[in-house]
Image (cartoon, rainbow, N blue to C red):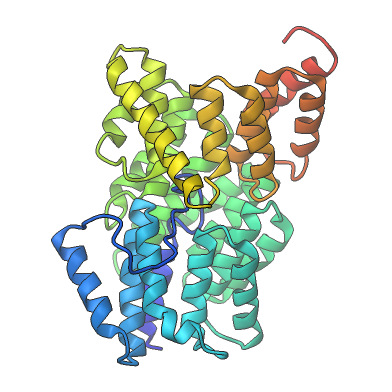
Length: 407
């Protein structure tokens, strides 16, 4: 496969793949050819091209088309585009020995649908075959990080040191170190690397997408350390420098930051035009609810909540499972049902252990207020232990519940 195609695959993988903050609830049609919604002209033309590619045996064309759909899917957190990408590679994916480029795309699609075991199996196959693509290590590290296996994730980040641009490995490692180790040197090292690469006048090795991802990681490092001013500055810098505009993951991460600091009106401005993603719709509904009619009409808030509930119901009607973490947050913060929220958050924690997943679990246990829930949540907070000031505060409140002390 051409080096250019590999670089394209790496660039599109830097966002969305590394994090899962703004995932849409998986809405994968049983038939990838089913028309769920009429798309704009340019995208519709790609669908026509997809139909033309079937039966041609054109591997390079199928890979290019799959990558285009994956980029669209990442930007909007829209499962339709992942289904189209899956269809583009289907003739090769069904073979007993698919080309490695196909296996890599298949792993990417499986990761989006939370089939982490399937994705890791594909990535292990590529590793055993000696397939040389940094995306293999990056995606493996991402999945292991989501699962809370920081030690193994760091090993794959370190594999990226063999790449010409050290910023890729440093960003990957800084995220892991900040979560499970000491965030201070992680921030300092990554900030120096970003500054060095940004100051280059010639010989840039870092792509704009890589630099934007590095800035987004810096924002998360400062956010978990409770430095709101620096976190906000890094978030804004990351969103402003994404080459194709902010994607759903980055918008969701920034929206969460704004919600945590009750900057709800800014969330309305940020997300009002990006409601196709379930995760972004949730955050918009939360902001509207927090404003209590002051800056977001009550009628609009009711519509947003009804739309979100309908999406969860539609997923279940297809025999699928809505995103548990998002639905838990919906039940906890919008429907004020801590019991069901806690059960969903606990089930979600069994799959994903990112800071936001653990926050929702701890918050729902605290709202439920039982010693059993508090004890269980405290146990999960250490599996793995995450460096996050917000979790430290929740731990103290949960311990008070456990010991029957006023919170």
